[in-house]
Image (cartoon, rainbow, N blue to C red):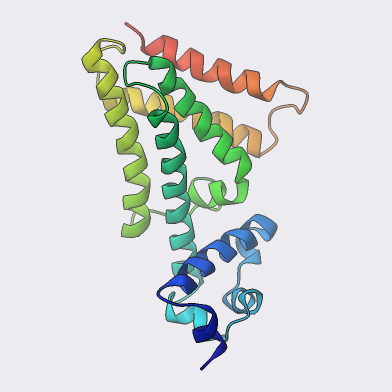
Length: 200
């Protein structure tokens, strides 16, 4: 029995590859992720990663898609912690988005930033990214039905809200905002300003 077979069963290697690639990404960016290095770090054969991913690009697509799913799970967890009638929960979802980006800057860059893979021709990545956006649209529509948010185009509202939190996250990650700024206060102010603009 090979070392791969002894250690990983029933798809566990694929999950381990994604987790380890995300760790390599955090340590050295896209250039730091190699299929050979991935196998060495997990103690499997050089061929093992290729049984799950044809090449590095396919691996990175899967890592980015997993990042979108992780972000969506965190946003959903915030939403699950408060009743749908609580508009404050919508603001906290925006905060969670920014905090995810700050805690996972290399992963976030792979998803959205300068290192982002083009989603246009990558179905897995496009679907993962779209799911997060549609989650935001659904949330806005829920508040519109209760009268808490203006009855305007929910997708336009979603783009405004997304632009605000994405812009703040990107500026913070790239060091474009001075270090002596109260980051937590800035995140709260940004999400409150967006929310105030959406109220009737």
